[in-house]
Length: 153
Image 1 (cartoon, rainbow, N blue to C red):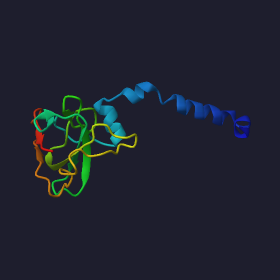
Image 2: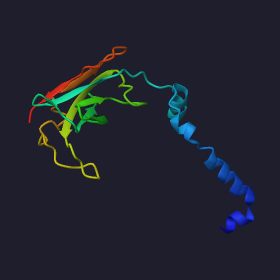
Image 3: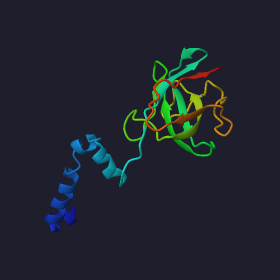
Image 4: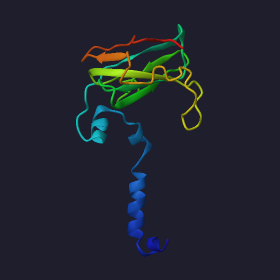
């Protein structure tokens, strides 16, 4: 409080900086704005989406984890909706993934606790990335909008 009395200029500068962070800047998802935030040009992404079925039925609340091709590093995750649908996001919602080869794992927690944890109804059957049989190859310029996965309990 004392600092503001001594330096009204400092107070005005702080206020101007805070006021400059408007909602419009937060809502701007243009390529130019995203490149500015990323500190350079954006990598090309390809739309990838689909559905997850468990025992033939669409499954809500399946977390899908994307790993590098070796299954060593988790890169991203997505979650299925009420219809079992999901999409991958990199820069904006459902914009897709960078071209490449990946491995996938699945955890089914339809009603997670507040901290995101809960019981995996698939009993960790699809959780080991290094041994996962689920692979995804994203090719440059080729959207994939029907990448479906069939899991068994």
